[in-house]
Figure 1 (cartoon, rainbow, N blue to C red):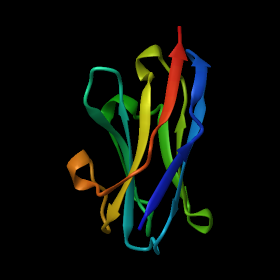
Figure 2 (cartoon, rainbow, N blue to C red):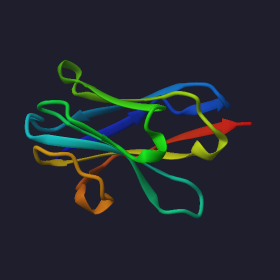
Figure 3 (spheres, helix red, strand yellow):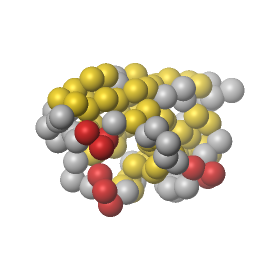
Figure 4 (cartoon, one colour):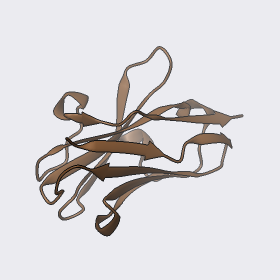
Amino acid sequence: QVQLVESGGGLVQAGGSLRLSCAASGRTFSNYALGWFRQAPGKGREFLAAITWMNGNVRYEDSVKGRFTISRDNAKNTVYLQMNNLKPEDTAVYYCAGRTGGSYYISRTDYKDWGQGTQVTVSS
């Protein structure tokens, strides 16, 4: 059973930065892909970024390109989302998601495993 545990959320002022972490456990991750999503109140769950575990290929949603960076630490079984120049509209619950596979995936329905989410609040 895969477990994904997010951390690193919090309250930050507009223009600030946060780094979210997603610690993965429960299997070997050589053929695995992870993504970050977010869900603001009253809205659907939105894709942000994805990465393949084996070779680190990445994909970003256009709205976060240049501000968010996804990365992984294979030794720690952890994926990160570095978020810079945060805006109030980035306020949401951020989720880590994973699935077996060697590519990256951008649809929430592609993912099988989900973390519990971490709240990010950006004040103006």
